[in-house]
Length: 135
Image (cartoon, rainbow, N blue to C red):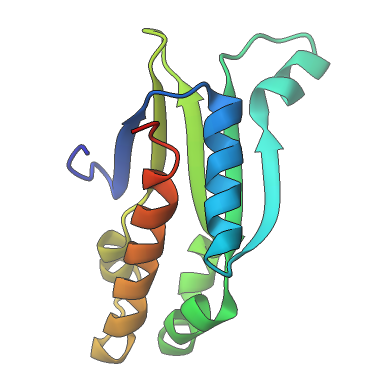
């Protein structure tokens, strides 16, 4: 895992983007999270005649995790539900990128009353992304 840069955490995956996304979605569902959307950015680009390496976004979450953050600071809602981007770089390596929950906490000035929820969000993101690294 790389250090968060501008609040982003990036992990390498040994899987193709579609398989990584399938595993992300399956793991999220198995944890009781709702998958709200899966966006195929490369597919959308192809529809308008443009090229883009494989790039997909999974949007998922649970009100039990996100609501405490928004009750503390409603602006946290701009970063919720959770998102993980699976993308293939120029080098052919697939990576998974998501917003670091601690960074989100700092970004929105969340207080101590949100700390347990921030930690739970972090654990969920780690569990979901670990399922899609191919290890």
